[in-house]
Amino acid sequence: MAEKGEMIRVEKLNKSFGDLHVLKDIDMEVKESDVVVLIGASGSGKSTLLRCMNFLEIKNSGKVIIEGKAVEPNKDNLNKVRQKVGMVFQHFNLFPHKSVLNNVIEAPMMVKKLKRAQAEKEGRELLAKVGLADKADVYPNKLSGGQKQRVAIARSLAMKPEIMLFDEPTSALDPELVGEVLSTMKELAKEGMTMVVVTHEMGFAREVADRVVYMHDGKIVEKGKPADIFNNPKEQRTQDFLSSIL
Ligand code: ADP
Ligand code: MG
Image (tube, rainbow, N blue to C red; front, side, top):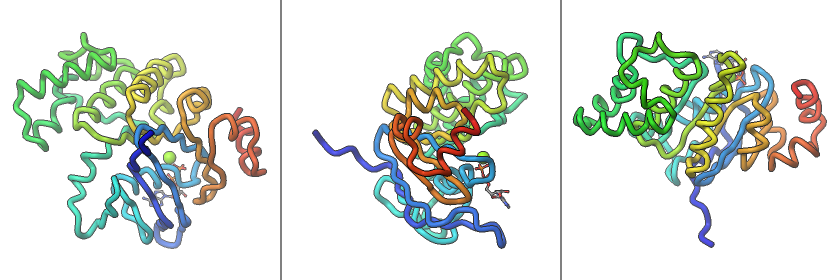
């Protein structure tokens, strides 16, 4: 069987905010169609790591390698790189004055210069995929939080990313709305999307993740298959964290 391609590799990544050293020699690899779930306490550096992977934050040292190419923020076109790496945030930030469909097609039209008819066709397909075909023409304020987040996922997919990063996509949702967003993400995973997901949804991690990575205080403490991490964590810190949340 062919070796899976490498999508993201991070090597000895360090990131500080002033005196605060937030990421400490992080090494991590994500292969094609892998789902990696990143867990850890608040403040451990999970968001900063994701943001470094699509260059919303710029590392201080180390490497961020996207599809085999080390990205140099001062030389490379970061907008081009970001098109490969989509990101979904806890807060969806849809444009309130645009319809759902127009939210989804904004970036492909503006950035990729897609013609409206084609953008709309693709946008409607994406809305159907996230279960919102009937919401194309409504405004975001008519949607539930779970629906808004699914629109945000469709919007990100509209740029045809090769990798999707999710930063606590269900943390701001009422509990009864979490499931629909996780199902959408599960579908994406099944279709082979490469995903890095920060979440506290351990059921999702167990079921969908190929690997779970536990971060503490800016370092990767332990990584492995979900069954190993959840049933037999090797490190005391991992055990303590899991017993604090499960
Ligand atoms: P997590 O997502 O695991 O909760 P973050 O990556 O958001 O952790 O934050 C890690 C640490 O970095 C925290 O102490 C946070 O306060 C700090 N931090 C994050 N972003 C910034 C920023 N832009 N400026 C200063 N400090 C930041
Ligand atoms: Mg965070």
